[in-house]
Image (cartoon, rainbow, N blue to C red; front, top):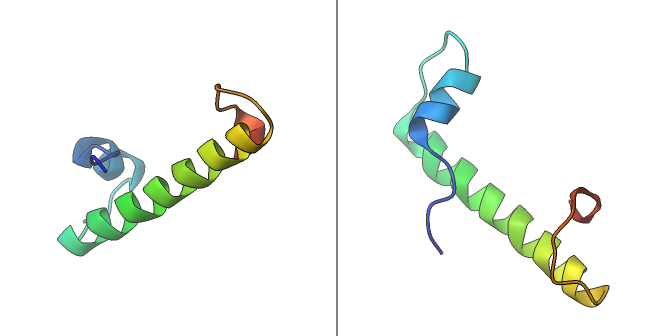
Length: 55
């Protein structure tokens, strides 16, 4: 699966702290898992559109 997050966006969200290289990889994996679960839930409900309630 493609990378989901932009490093610049993560750095911005982290405010005034440094972000370790390993953090990006782990966070991206977590987001990918979240998206997959949301997609599965949408499909289970007969929808082709992922909505906020799927998260």
